[in-house]
Image (tube, helix red, strand yellow):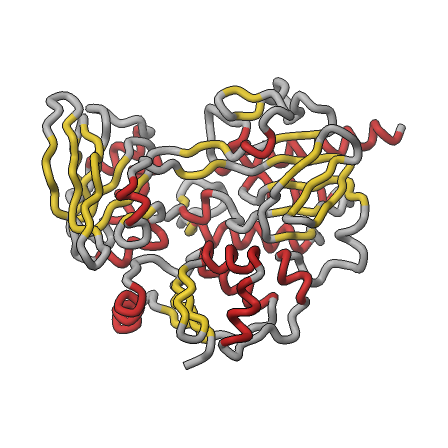
Length: 419
């Protein structure tokens, strides 16, 4: 067995990001694809006790998942761990690997004064990158350690134009990124840690490294909300999941629960019926917030049941650190009951990722306010698109449209600065 092992599956965005980091470092690794291999799946669970992918081993050390790998890299511990296991980085660009920079960028690209820096890489950010690159603005996209936006943890995408048979969310985002790269968008696969919009050029930091730009496009999207339970956090990856695409296949022929009442929850529940013997949806009200088409699909599925006017009080775990059940409170009667299950999927909405910009831009309920029929923010030269500013539609297709608008707005603004 190799010094570095990744347990992975098809169309797992977190698996791809883990592989990308190691490949940039020139590290060779053994990839164990458990998509259709029950024996390797059981092996992974036995070695780690976890039901999520990827699971990564360096030597005899279980690193964890993609987030854990990137955290080790940011802290500087990853290279030492690789060296100790005899898997030190090889021919990869060390500096590029450390920051997640695209290794093939032309010399001096990152140090230049950029025309536009795009922060975020979901449908809005990548569409902005495509349009800005085609306008010869040579954009730099700081896509984040968890690149690709919410579609990377979405199951079948049936409503994006051009895919009559539907497409998996991670696959769609992979194609989107390749298209942006084709037009020579530069990418940094790390999180922005600080920004300074108080002077021009604007400054953006990734760790200690500073980048400068004449304009900024913010497309940082939104993050899935958790229920805020200690037991939920403790059992995340051990039966509690935020991603049906990534983890649904671990729950074949089992009874699992989904929390939520919107489109995301109905999508997750419907997808999970491919694997589970039964899916029970827990919702705080007695009617759903999901669109009618998603409601109809869920109600028509014989494997889906509903538990109305209810909320999860506690996720119950075993000594082996696995989910064994739930305590659920009826919000009308206040009665708490216990329910046996092996898995819980949380799909209760999202929070816009705007903490970086607090106090710099006008916001409302965490969303960046943009001018009517525009992506212009309250600060000249800074534009926002996608779910950070869309409180109404929040769809991939509308995010893509606003990304196009942001690139065009930025291009026109830059032209006016030169005249």
